Image (cartoon, rainbow over all chains, first blue to last red; front, side, top):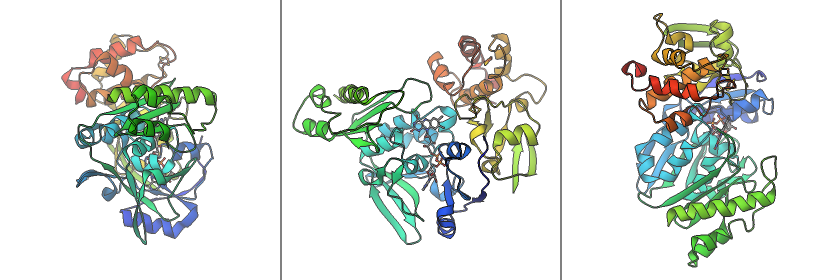
Length: 269
Length: 156
Ligand SMILES: Cc1cc2nc3c(=O)[nH]c(=O)nc-3n(C[C@H](O)[C@H](O)[C@H](O)COP(=O)(O)OP(=O)(O)OC[C@H]3O[C@@H](n4cnc5c(N)ncnc54)[C@H](O)[C@@H]3O)c2cc1C
Ligand code: FES
Ligand code: FES
């Protein structure tokens, strides 16, 4: 399968990428690891006229500490997140989530920015970011705005990214030593979650239980009110409306959400 | 567009279409046929090559994305005419039958052993998660990678 023809431009800096984005408008797409975009282009589900490659832009990569947050450049790859001493110490849930994405080859290419911008509700890093209560930096010619993970995911494969905006960095609170739980239910190697659950500090996020990564609010409330892990987890699917596919129908997904939430919470206690 | 990259140690410069996939570039422009196209959907790993020393699925990388970088295919492993320790172990342990998955398996194993020179059996199984073999049942492949592990030359 071969993508439709396009023009390719390698951005030299974040500012250059943003300039190219505003210059080409809707015809252009950002290319990071290409592990969501290229498969779609090969299937001709996407046919951008211009690709702006940001993968080799130095000022978009790297992981640093800013006060009580980790700042992770958009083009940081899954493999780098999973092996980073800093992330493993300060946001181990995120490092673990990255280590479960696809397979080693996919983790050598895919990036955190690409995964979040793609906004697949079944994906690992969007769920992890919602559980962690992180945020994303969105930068355009007009400046940078910070959007909380809870507000970033707008719908099925839709985000708060506006035309001309580049996701430049991801911020997650540093929580060394805080217990967390992460559960991903899959049937095949290198696959997305049929359902996933991630929990830390009273927050619970679910993957593939709706059009965006969702919070299990009823279960969170029960925990806050002093319920046991098992009792809180019984409420994990309340208010969710997961889709159905060959892997699972709605009732099975809701069952999985309860079981995986219980396991994630029990891992904490 | 012009791509400039190193393939198996050789500096190359080729005029390609931006949409040319790395696997097609390697097979058709460079004439290197080790990387196979199995699924064409990032699943089977038959197209695995090393990009800057790390395993990638070349059916899901543009040649353009490899600009300025270093690509190694299975042909480049035995460049000196002597089998790479991972290749030798696949032969000694009967890690292949039809051989279609083998170049990808070997490249994935080389990358795995660079990151973790002495993996456990479980780590080898997980490390080869991105590679499918329809013939061997995997046992001899795992045995080959374990046999090659811990050898000093493997990480070279
Ligand atoms: C076989 C297979 C299995 C997979 N399994 C999993 C899995 O188990 N779990 C999981 O979470 N994911 C999985 N993935 C997806 C993988 O994680 C992708 O790498 C990721 O979703 C996209 O990241 P990327 O860097 O490759 O983005 P790209 O494909 O380059 O881009 C994806 C989208 O985001 C946009 N974009 C990219 N970067 C930016 C930016 N900085 N600012 C604004 N827009 C941007 C692009 O324009 C495009 O629309 C799998 C992929 C494959 C092919
Ligand atoms: S052909 Fe590339 S992964 Fe199967
Ligand atoms: S040896 Fe035939 S597919 Fe692996």
